[in-house]
Each structure stands twice: as structure tokens, then as C-alpha cells.
Image (cartoon, rainbow, N blue to C red; front, side):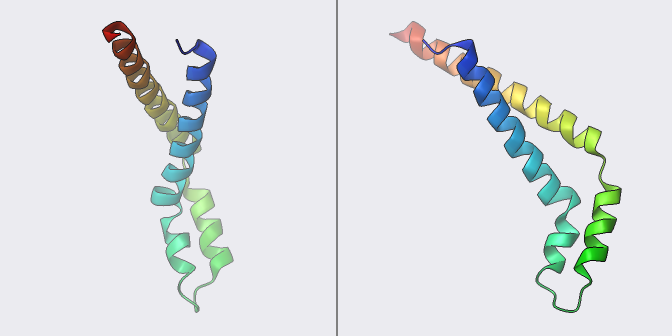
Length: 84
């Protein structure tokens, strides 16, 4: 039986991954794209991206995703345990 501490650690890992992916794929995509352009001003684009990020929205979305994924993992583990 997995403990609540295991699921808390699992939720924190999922939250961090979703937070990083949320920032990288949505908010910092222009900066990542500019890294492959040699003529772009990377510092200016990074600064613009940083000022346009709504961190509260990204944090709430990553917490929500972590809760859903952790709930599904816990439910899956409980079903496996009850089947045995």
C-alpha cells in the first residue's frame, strides 16, 4: 500500500513538470524560438516574455493538473489493490 507521503511527492513532481512545461510551451515559446535565430535580441525577447507571464494562472493550472493526475494514479492503485 502506497502512503499519502508517496502521493504528495508524486503530486509535487507532477506540479513542477507541468509548471515548467506550461511556461516553456506557452509563455516562453517566442524566446525559445528566438534562440535558433542568430539575428534576434535574446535578452529583449526574454524580458518581454517574462513581463507577459501570468504566473498565478500557470501556478493554478499546474496545481489543478497535479491534483487530477494524482487522483487518477491513486484510484488506479486502489483498483489494483482491491483486485488482488
